[in-house]
Length: 398
Image (cartoon, rainbow, N blue to C red; front, side):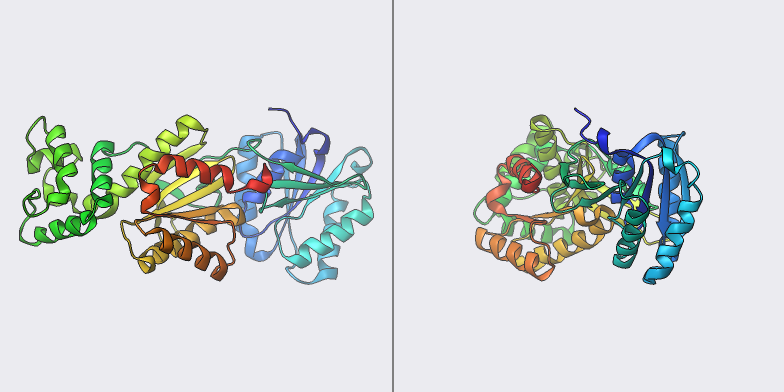
C-alpha cells in the first residue's frame, strides 16, 4: 500500500484530546515522523485519556517524544496562552522542524483557539482533522490545496486495541462458532412457518425438565432434530447434544437455545465473509471489563481498519425488542468506536419492520448511515448481506 500521508507528516504534531482517543491515535500514526514529537493538549477531564494514549504510542514507537499540557475547555484566551507556552518548550528548534495540528478531538473552543494560535505562529503548518463520516483525513498543508485522503487500511486495529485505549480489557471472546451446524439448523427452524413459535413452545416445556423435542408435537423443529441426530452419530440424545455444545446436560444449553445460537450463526457468517474480504478482527461473546467501571458485553464485533462494527443479535420478530437491543449496542459500542463506529441488529423482523426500525432509529438518534437492521429475509445468506454492509457503510470514503 502506498504511503499517501508521507508528504504531510510533521516533526511536531499538536493533538487535541477528547473523550475518545481513537481519532487522536489515527492522526498520530499517520501524521508524525518516526522520531517526532507529540504535544497532547487536554482538559482536566481528559487527562487520563491523554496519559493512556501517550503510553500506547510510546510502546509502539520508542523514539517518539510526547508532551502533555492541560488547557481549559472553554476559555479561549487561556487556551491560546497555553498553546503558546507549549510552543516555547520547543521554539529553539522550530525553525528547522515542521509543525502540525490535528483538531479532531477536544472542545470546539480548543479547536478554534489552538488553530488560530498555531496558524498565526506557523503559517506553513499542516492542519488536519479526521472526518468520521467518510473515514478520510482532511488536510490543509500550510496554504496549499486542501487534501481529503481516505485512511483505508493505513491504520488497522484489533478489538483488544480499541478496548484497551479506553482503559478496558477483553476478558472473554469467541473467535470460532461453538457449533456452526447446530446454529444453522436452528436458523432454518426459525425461518420455517410456525418454526419460531414452536421453538419457543418447546423451550417452555423445559420447566418440567429439559428434553429433546417431540416432532409429533413440534414438527417445524425437524431440521434441528436431524442435525442433533447427526452430531450424535445417528440417534440424538440429550447428553450427546449437550456435549456437542460443550455442556454436560441439556438443561445447561438453555441460554444457547434462547439466543446464543444466533450469535454463533452470525460469527460463522463472518468467517465466511472474511474469506471474501479482509476483516482485521472479529469475535462474539465479548466480555469487556475495567477495574473502575461496570463490565459490559458485545454480542458480535468486527474491526476493518480502525473502524468498529458492532452487532446485537436477538431472535425476535418484534420491532420493539429489536429496538431495545439496537439501542444497547449503539450506546455501548459508540463509547468505544466513536463517531466512526457502525451498528447493526440481526433479527427475525419482517421487511416492513426492518425498514421502519432502521428509519426510525436513524432519525431519532441522529445516526443516518450508521445503523443497519437485518431481518428474516437476510438470514438465509447473512454472510453476503454483512459483506455488502461493510462495503457500503462508508460509500463516500471509497
